Amino acid sequence: MSDNSALHHAASQQQAHIPDDGEARRFPPPNWQRHLVLFLLTVASVFFAGAQMEAGPPPAGSDAAGAMLFLIKNLPAGWPFAVPLLAILLCHEFGHYFAAMWHRVPASLPYFIPLPMLSPFGTMGAVISMPKRIRSRNALMDIGAAGPLAGLVVALPVLVVGLAQSEVKPFDVGG
Image (cartoon, rainbow, N blue to C red):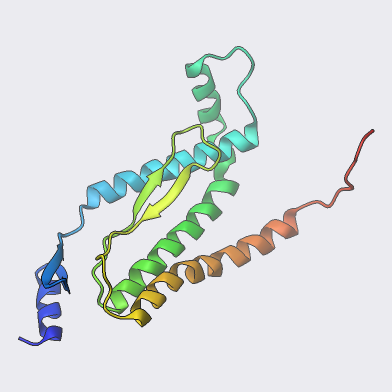
């Protein structure tokens, strides 16, 4: 069996592999539930972070439950922060993923990493599992560059819209 037919056979068996130090590195089929749960937790934590930025701190004297209810009430206000951030993150991670698929390098789906609910950003990004070694420097370069370039495609329009909606105000030094 040639190298290419072995890769096609592995893909048809839902397990991709690439020789790594004489051994095949196998990736099991994706656990869709794990990826979905991590993504939904990330979406929730990013929306909470956006709501916290928009609504400000909870009322003074609120206990933890009161603070959480305050944020939940203001959750829709978090969308101007959450939607662009998640769009950039999704494009970035799937840029890496699709470049790896293009070069026939086995890669997992992104594992999104939510931060605790009351963090400033709501996420630490995502991780894609890949082999230790990639046989071609060109493939490594393409996979590494594809994420930032794909994220940039979304980030530039987000920047333009954000600047168009911003107000320019003089800086008051005070004194």
